[in-house]
Image (tube, rainbow, N blue to C red; front, top):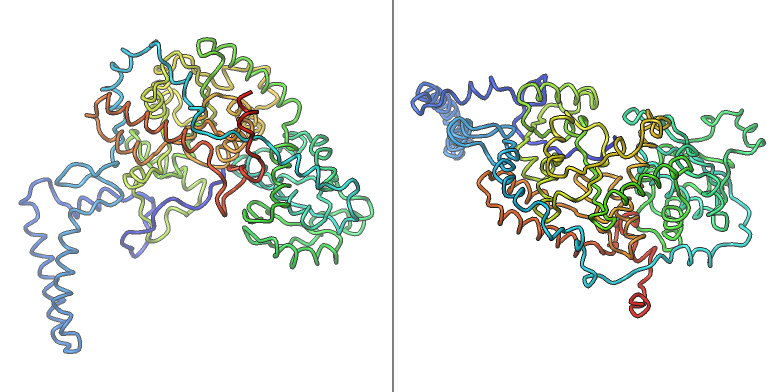
Length: 565
């Protein structure tokens, strides 16, 4: 599960050597803070003051810095006073309440609100029936394929050479690489070789292109715009001794421009006959000419469809969801839940597992990102991360949010996720709030899932398909999965993403208040749902990705009168 930049701050005081764990040690805090009583600071205060006076005396002996003596004294006293009240890593201060976000209080909030939620179960109103307001949005329709087919060649010009790319990461990072490779091949008038899938150390999926995507359909859909072959022809293989690694690998920087490819890559393709670019993820800028964007549209929204075994099972799963949601008129909610062990570890957030959880997360971080979180100067602040909206939402928090928005206990909910951290414990309250909860393991039989087990990208493709056709999609933690899915839903649903994108900073404040009133909580959640509705039809901004925002590059405004008809 690759992720981008670290979300952690790099602040804090440096120490002579990094601690063995990325978490601050309790022993050190106690040695600084002393006991709970105010009188416990006397001897330490005298010692620090003596140290400051020694420093100041030394300064006074050097006339050149005499003017800085008062500043140094004040700085020393501030440092001394702050050393007792400074909350390293969001820990509880010795003399006051825990800072906001440093304690996972959502269970206490749930305990207070649950009886009130229960009184509104099986109500006549369910937000599922009217989550989205049709009056807020203009209607759009796909037009990228029409535009591209008009400008496509009946016979492609002679190719300048072969482009070989390596698609790394999980399902949707691979999707990104494939679509960008189509765009680059079209830009360079090169022949694209079906992308090679890199065996990722996190995903551990040995699938190749045809295991996940319909290869024949992909080639045929793009035949008027980009030439695609399954492998290099015999003469080219002979030239490189049948060894792909002998082909020059061009190191292309992330987000490279159109001009870079025309000026740096095209001459090498013409010279060598074939080049590789590996890795290829995020190697093309978002801002490129409309003809290049058009190829991205065609590749992502039209040419890439899942392989038949995935498609067949996914269609069955969607139909089962529709049948089981009879009370919702065939509509259901899908949730992309990012609460796997490695996600929790990477976020450096704390929940309610105490010392056992801390040790477990330290081990997971070291295993997955060796040494990254133990660098000198690195300070982990779980409370600050939570208040900044960087912590993965727990199943409990997702459930409370949805119930507050008006989705009652009759709502059919599909959870798309990997292996949830301590699943039995964390998923139980979500099932309590939504008894009709489904996952791929409950929706498909063990026999149906057997061919997909051990292949994380194929399993993710099943989740993607069920989420794509839901009435409401809920994203909880970012990443390529929701980014591509939101764009795909806009493309299918007239430009509207029909997606709840929570304000996680606001949620952190609300879940940190066990005294919150149900009416206030509901009002805040319904406002959040309304804001998601308003932002559902956002257009792509300069520098934005059309994979998330397909308008206006891939879609055209629909005539209002025709839309009403």
